[in-house]
Length: 265
Ligand SMILES: [Zn+2]
Image: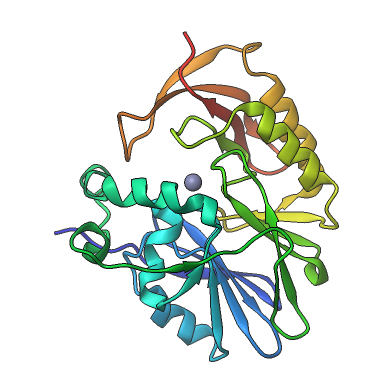
């Protein structure tokens, strides 16, 4: 019998909690004076809503970084969510392959999304939209590359940028909906100019210093210059790529730094 992953959380700051499951997914809970905001919802395998309600009784807004299964599938528990309209194709494809992902990962995924006509209507969120939580504001920033409509949230009061999968030590650009690496360069340039000192992604229980964007850029610049290795995406084996390692272990962030592109011979 498949077991649902367990949930835990760590405190990034007084007003920022990072919730993670036991299989490498995470999401972020922002706590304002009047409202709370959940950024991403992981796979929908756990009772994330109950877990969030154990952490706060503030009215909750849910914002999704992009339409991949490990970010969007928990959204059904909350009734409504914001996601950039450019992600509707990514989400449609995610639902189409959800049964395969469940079989390949062994993670029980929401049957609601796999079968039948269950619909969750997302409200659009665009560049510059601000969620005012009372003493804490989260501002949407479009971060294309990993997917066309990936958004991040800039939390100026915390000097923090939530990035989903859009900026990560392991940068995935090999998916059908991913954009060319030149788009990632533009996104990295944009991120570097934002008034934030740390970034926090949706697969990590820790932040990375903004100064490390220069390392992620060097990693992307190393495509074709270092040896590339064949890569198969375990949840969807037909998605293949080439992984380029810039650093097998970056001591500062305690992570490998690599980028995965479409397959290159
Ligand atoms: Zn993703």
